[in-house]
Amino acid sequence: MPEKRKKTIDVAADRQTMTELYETYEQKMFGIANAILHNDWQAEDAVHEAFVRMVPYLSRCKDVNDEKTKILIVRVIKSAAIDIYRKNKRENTYILDSEEDWIEDKHNPVEVYLATLSAGEMVKKIIGQLSNDDRKIIEMRCYDGMPVSDIGEILGISTDNVYKRLSRARKRVKEIIAEGEDEDVKQKLG
Image (cartoon, rainbow, N blue to C red; front, side, top):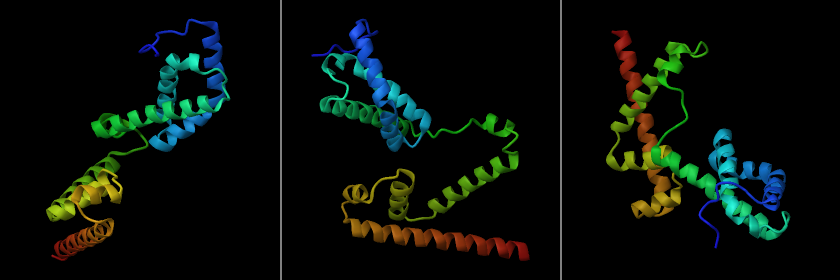
């Protein structure tokens, strides 16, 4: 049974194995991680974490090109990438610059930042005008990125019913937007 985590690689053979693994699989591992995370930096972090997690298993990697080694590499990189994905979801963070950085950046004038804020506020107001059912289904699909099948399981309805509710909710959002545009035109006309 492997130790929890070795701090260093202390055997020359383990170092050689790790070097061979890195040279052989690093790009493939990056591709797998990037497919899960859709972020180059986080994919690089996942690859690094995967290699750290591989240290206790180096004795099992007799041949770098062995099928069992490939399977182990894929499992470890998927696990590392999924852990980062879950952490992102749990923290509900998006990789954005801080407000000060945004305002100070010469390529993003303050007007663009303010427009982004007002668009976000507008979306919140529109979503706030939806019924609880419509709001819930829009949030699950659009904000949480949940698959339709998962939404159906949570709500206890079929996937066809989920699609129909999403369609109705989107139609209602369009109606709310149209009503808001009408009010803006009325205000401008006087």
